[in-house]
Picture 1 (cartoon, one colour):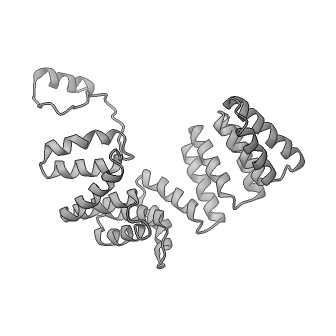
Picture 2: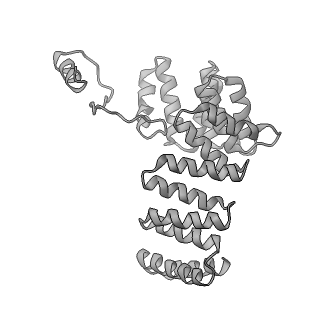
Picture 3: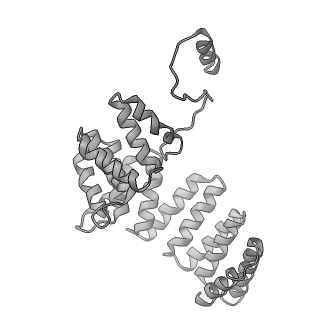
Length: 274
């Protein structure tokens, strides 16, 4: 493993074109696999390289080999899931993480990855089942605390518990953007506007184009009737992880005055097949 990594590093420092780097890296790994065919790390690395170069199907096979030889190698599980997603096999990608977690109960990275998949599918109970056992102790991983706090607050309205978890997520890094924004949102939803905006503004001072912080500020300003400030950041909604695909292809509103007209009504009816 170490000699292969050193060989790959040497290749990458050679100043060759990217395609040549990948070809030489592949040759290094394949040569090593001739001597060590059951090396999980080598099989995983070759799978990752093939995924990067557009062969996700073979990448899945190599990651399966890596997991056969080393069932606890999460990097191979993660690469396999990415390869399955590249093939459009999203349920299989999720199932592969769940299978890994069955064999490695409580594995932190796998737990977070599977919980995030459930969150994206709106399966909040499944997410709680995975993450709740990981927040029982005094020390809690910040990614676990942030994701669980987000769901408890945003989706389930359990603001008090969400606040506790989000503050734990910020314990070692008070300016960590994801939790800073989520805590700001949680406080704003409780009507604690001064505290909430202070956190969101702090996040935006560090990262002025942060999509989620801009989205939080926009939604809250709009809810309060402050349309000028709300609209300023509302464009962030298209890049947000919560963005919804627009199925009808309507013209995007750009903040202009809204008016009802026969022309607009006709367009709406035709697109909705009314």
